[in-house]
Amino acid sequence: MKSIVYLSEAKVEFSEDDLSDLVTLASSKNRLCGITGYLCFSRGRFIQYLEGSSNAVNEMMESIRRDPRHELIYETEIPEIRHRVFDTWWMRHITKDELNAFQLEHCIEQNLLYIKSNFFFKDKCREYIRENIRTISSIYRAQKKGFL
Ligand SMILES: Cc1cc2nc3c(=O)[nH]c(=O)nc-3n(C[C@H](O)[C@H](O)[C@H](O)COP(=O)(O)O)c2cc1C
Image 1 (cartoon, rainbow, N blue to C red):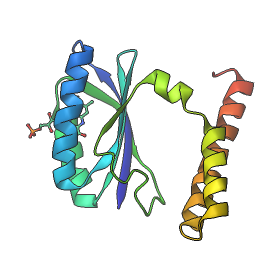
Image 2 (image 1 turned 90 degrees about the horizontal axis):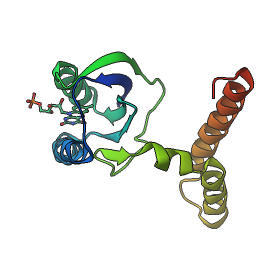
Image 3 (image 1 turned 180 degrees about the horizontal axis):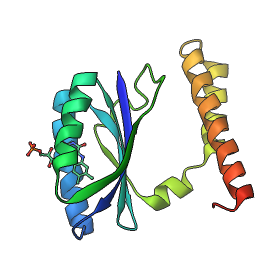
């Protein structure tokens, strides 16, 4: 399992239609090679998260890096992700508004209720909760430093 996240800058105009074409094509190709993740486009920049087998992610990143429609600013591998985070998101397009509306507290609540009612996947739920709490704490620290 390999997970990569990168930030890139668009080198051409991307309309809503262009984005939706890109994501449609990407998700059908990703489904074939077993890559999941999401793509977020905002203010001329992309953030994409990809996960899958090492070979599949390396090959995909090679063609993404070569794509002249954008230029990579920074890419990094996320360590210690042993299982997929996104099971069936072959390449989900997430808008900035969606991300803002995404309530971490709500996710924690859902996971707690899931653990309460279900015997299975308790560890996975605890992992999600831990990640959400980490995210909340980093948002809090960033706010305190005036980054947000
Ligand atoms: C920001 C961005 C993200 C992309 N993400 C993917 C992706 O997840 N999967 C994919 O198949 N192509 C993606 N593409 C398109 C690839 O870069 C490439 O154009 C496509 O895979 C066809 O490559 P090929 O001509 O080497 O076959 C992305 C392109 C851009 C600009």
